[in-house]
Length: 303
Ligand code: ADP
Ligand code: MG
Image (cartoon, rainbow, N blue to C red; front, side):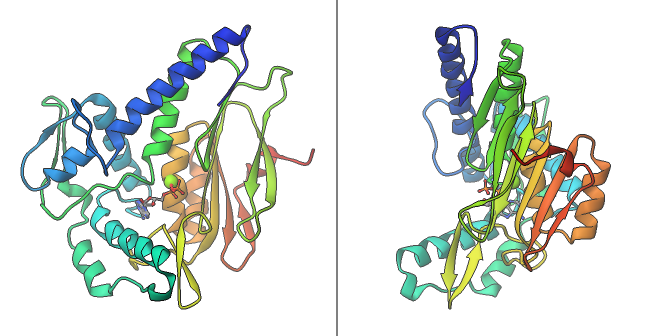
């Protein structure tokens, strides 16, 4: 977090507030751990097929948003795919722990899990304030959207609190408020997926820059890399791209969209980005070539 303010004390208070807020979101969106005194997504997953779980608005709002992004990406970004993703995750972890024995998950197990990945199995009851998963085998995985959503809400809260100059970097997800104190935009480097260097630098004022890449989380089987973005159509890591970057005034949109675009042909993804307001994208295709939406170039900077 970088904050500029009129005094160091004010800036430190902002950082403290932001950290507390992000922790609140983290505890709610965690699917791996439960916390004393709060029903979170781990609680919802544990009650799948059993009972609706009372959750607060931070959870309901995010899930509602994720469901809307499922529709926008035509099911490419699907938070009900938790069963499939869990299998990939356990094979990836086993493969990383013991690379010699690394294997791919059996397709029949992936197909079986995918029988229970329908987004319509997620029932959100606003008035009751509950979230219910209708099938015991359906599991939520919000890895594609929760970080961006939390970042967006946290940034909005900081704006409301009067913060005018801030940069928040949450691993692959960089959000900005305003400009740097000298009035120039924030410079954000986009990683070259093939080397540890920078592919290009963008300059933003108030936007978020989110990148998903095949180089972030993967394991190797038979000399080939298998990364963590799973195409719901093939149930395999998407082979279309090596990285997708989205710049948008909405960090939640940018996060959910990077994952959705990763699993979409370039023409379809380009058409989608072009019709979204204040949203641009950069694709590094798996043959190493690049594509940009029409306005992406306006963010590029050379200095
Ligand atoms: P990261 O910040 O880790 O790059 P991404 O936004 O790229 O996150 O999302 C990747 C994560 O989303 C995976 O680790 C997994 O939890 C989940 N995921 C992978 N593929 C999909 C998909 N097609 N739809 C929804 N979630 C997915
Ligand atoms: Mg994402």
